[in-house]
Amino acid sequence: MEVAHQVRVILLDIEGTTTPISFVSDVLFPYAARNLDRFIRQHLQDPEVHSHVVELNENRIADLEANLMPPAWRDGSEEARINSLVAYGHWLMDRDSKRSALKWLQGKIWEKGYSDGELAGQVYGDVPQAFQRWRERGKRIYIYSSGSVLAQKLLFQTTQYGDLTNQLDGYFDTRTGPKKNPASYQAIVSEILCEPRQVLFISDTPEELTAARSLGVQVALSVRAGNRAADSTEFPVVHSFDEIVPA
Image 1 (cartoon, rainbow, N blue to C red):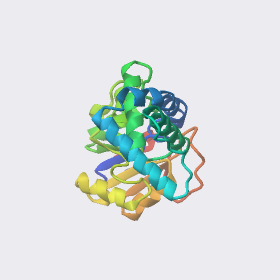
Image 2 (image 1 turned 30 degrees about the vertical axis):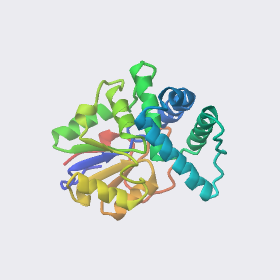
Image 3 (image 1 turned 90 degrees about the vertical axis):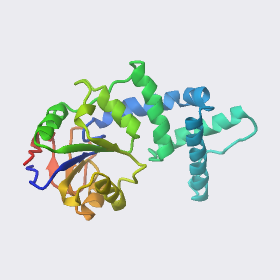
Image 4 (image 1 turned 135 degrees about the vertical axis):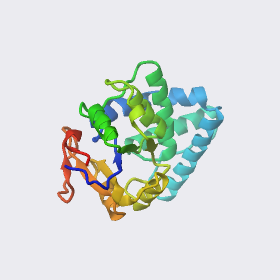
């Protein structure tokens, strides 16, 4: 796929695009689930953690009002509150929730895992050379993922090919907005100071591509080994970043 001359920015999803889905689903998510209880107990009094806990409780109330049947909340003691919070966090994880507060907590848990050497980032083999090639052609590279900005940085800092963050110009997460909402892409192009047609967004999720394309962003569907089967044939398809040839 040859990138048009007008493309100045390449915007990338992570899961199924730069990184195997199995790394996220089989390594990162289980690690966060195993360590959520311990992290909450150790850091509940930290002001930043506490603020995200408050946000999670607000999320739970919204889920309750939406009849989504989150786990019951018990306020009888601090132990009961912690258990309730952990149960709600696990409930959100089981639903693959994109709640920003949950994603922030996961990122902080992974931060310790990376620091302790229990975790290391993974990317597909074509990613490092593609980053270098695109940069040499003057393209800017940004990441847009449901995972927190912290989690994104940690992943690209610790890949099997070394630290790739020096090749990246910035990161966006759900604080920017949901990835299936066109307004999120408007916010991104406004922040990076370019026109929608100057951005190429690559993702393995057709609904995200539809949202971006509705704004005028150029898009491509990532079809990697192990990806979920995409039932859409309306997007250009790339199987490797080697196919993305910058003008």
